[in-house]
Length: 549
Picture 1: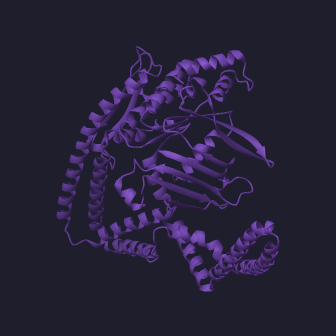
Picture 2: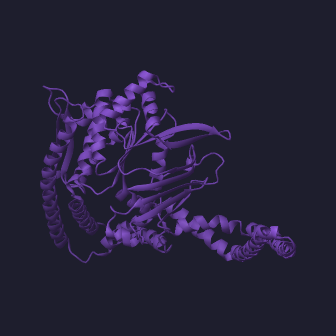
Picture 3: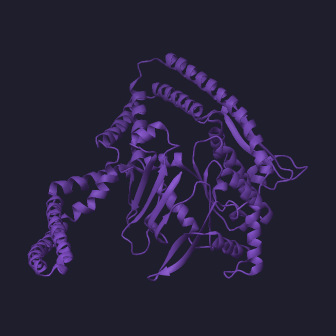
């Protein structure tokens, strides 16, 4: 659960501190006010990739920080990040060049670690996410998540990789000696280039953060020296002045408060002088340190250019190369023995894939019933829905042998057909909400984000969506951006987002609405007018009363 979100210089947000409640948190405002930017900032905090365009114009850096409850974290994560007291923080910053640095509970964290932590904390459903539901691989992954089949799926992927490795070894036996030697030389050279770099976790991020300081060390040393001299002189003058005013207050007691203040200022200036002196000593780096940092960053750049988009991809490439070298090196087995091992590996893969299929089929039946039940409460009169998991032994891959398809029809007399061919935008949004509701019972994620989940639905269905979100919020913290007053009326907390010009630059702000302000905002949403009429306010009160607010 998110306790507090602080955003600084992120897109149109200058400075924002948000403290959401535990239930249904509603966000409304005019189109373009910056509602989705808040969700983007939360996504950035939890590992989403970003560029320099997230910085507010003129800002030196963007920063997002969040305080979270640790109730839904696995014990390993709690231990890994030293979380005590049930609450921890995540912070991430970005500079004008798109480089970021992050920390979890004060300790430096990589992008992959942020993303992993985010997977335990918040489930995002963006405006376009329902389009991903049209992809068979997404449908399969959601089914596995619902059925808690991740371990079984990983076992199948492992068995598939094992079979592929033996198959590659078998192919290597059939290679000519010259071809095998050529590939071995290539793979070993590439592996040595990566391994020889001796990459440490988080090193690239640390060096990228250190480089600007090293590069400008002489300037920093000079500036800190000048500043120290001025502050040291000011400290001396303040100490002399303190002696003078002490004598003054001995004559006139009225000046005694000034004496204490000046003495405190003198002490503070002297401390500051010492700190500036220490800073100057620490910032003056030697050329060797600069060369080392630049050399390492260039090495990382070269490796990423050759072997992967980022350092984790480069390390994954190294593992792949090790497997290939081992496969080509180990040619002591004769062909018949390798064929026996391959047959055994394929049999194991088929056994695991079939076992996974049986569990997927059972989960598909249960998920079909749950989604159908949830969908019927979202305005579908005679909807039919089914999750189909068809098994093909000849088509087994790292994901198993199942072809998963979500089938749907909202029209009586029409057969079930794949969701991607039959559902409209509004129907897709509601099916996704039904799916999220079903999944929420199966996972431990404590917060869910719905960015305009009501897109494409009308007022009557909007009320049903609001009721569904309110029920979902009984066990989860929900964030919902909406343009429908029928949905907004169900919020436990209602935030209004608006945009204004600040110092010549647009800036978004968020305010928590009290009861009367909430009535006016819902009336505005009903009539599209900033100045609500009596009729609009009456209608708004009726909506809130019906929602139990």
